[in-house]
Length: 319
Image 1 (cartoon, rainbow, N blue to C red):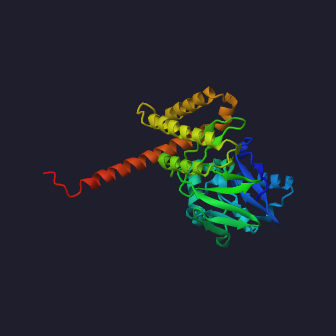
Image 2: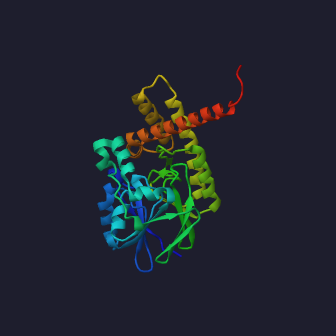
Image 3: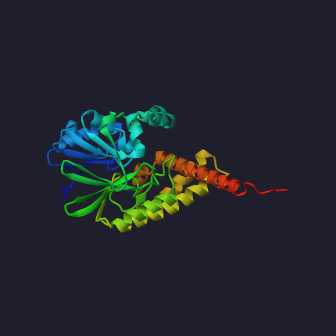
């Protein structure tokens, strides 16, 4: 049985309780869930030192997926001896993050260093692929991988027992939560956002009947069923809302951003979220990302439908 981990607030984007890393005490050392981005590495190191943990002594890092805000700093810990555990699809990118970094530079340009920073490479010998349902034991701690695509195909949630309770570190699959509220927001990131697959992953998590969820963005959820239900509702609403905005031919990109931001803030304030929190946690960066994620999903779906249609007519005479 594992003792309660400590959540280190990374102050991601300069915002309180926007992202966390979780540190566990093992038999002889410490283990992390999530490294966070390179941009917050110094914040994480300072937070570890505050709770008496030497950052260079971390034995292992469990990553939910390889997006920059979850895995960008993993290379620093690997360089200092930590083993990195990740979905098999993420292994090659942790070893050689050039494609991820190139894509991030293309999206963020000169803002990349302040948004997240690039991903640091990991030594190949320190990166370990983990399969669905595989249990990893490190320093007296046990974590079981749950493959949970929908946000990203390289996504694992990690299950462990904490103080007798079965808990899950959900990464992004259970969405994000504005601090001090139960309201769920979503990162619909390109290129692998797929709402149908995401909903299946939520069904899978619900079947485990966890006692608590640990959200990277941010905090502990003690009512997992209600939270997962709210996440489902938000996926349905947000996919439909963004699709409608993207298909409105009267709007240019600037107009789509404004329409989506207005719809999101209206829904949030109707659920008791203050305008200040809307501005802090539901900003233009997330709006841009989500528009891109849904657009990519729609493009891939249309392409698949076109190919299926073409295939169904193969060999049929049209004379």
